[in-house]
Image 1 (cartoon, rainbow, N blue to C red):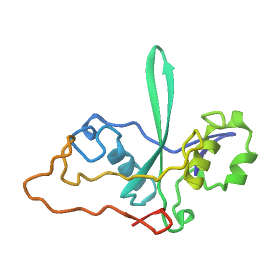
Image 2: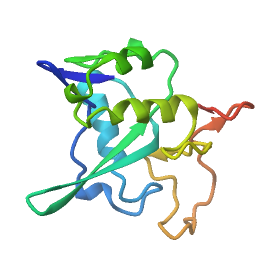
Image 3: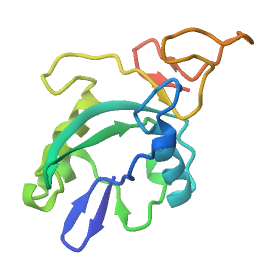
Image 4: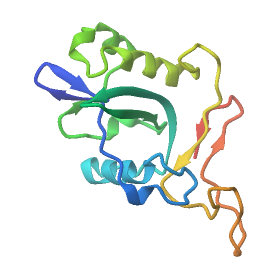
Amino acid sequence: MLCREGRARRLPGCAAREEDHGKTQDCGNGIKCLSEHVLEACGATIPWMSWIADKHSEQAGVERVDRVYAHRSGDSKDVAWPGAEWLSLEELAALPAESLEHEGRELEWARCWVEERDESGAAVRRGYGTARDAGFGYNGQGHEGGGVTIVGDFTLDGKPSL
């Protein structure tokens, strides 16, 4: 999915908030605020995401990191994001790189997700980052209540599923 702004297109996103960087299962990645942003923007609940890549840049002497996440759902095209459009890999490949926010790296990131590999081409088994604290501290110690929170499972062919 890409947001359209005139002839330019960009990935949907939001700025991470400091309160999201506490002792959660995915500490510091801002998944909670991104999940809330998706819910507010298009009414979709995204309970988990998988990290794809980081795009580092510098603006006015300050480092900026744009973190790219993906989520596999039943039929994503049912999710309507105002001002955005769903594109296949072929449609994304046909766009001029200069019309994309990250100069065409969006296609590489989409391929990484679809082909289950990292940017170097190595096969990966995607993990989950959640917006909800599953009861574990940053150091991996459980809380007094114990118990297990199942966020998702992998199918027999290794794809994330809920």
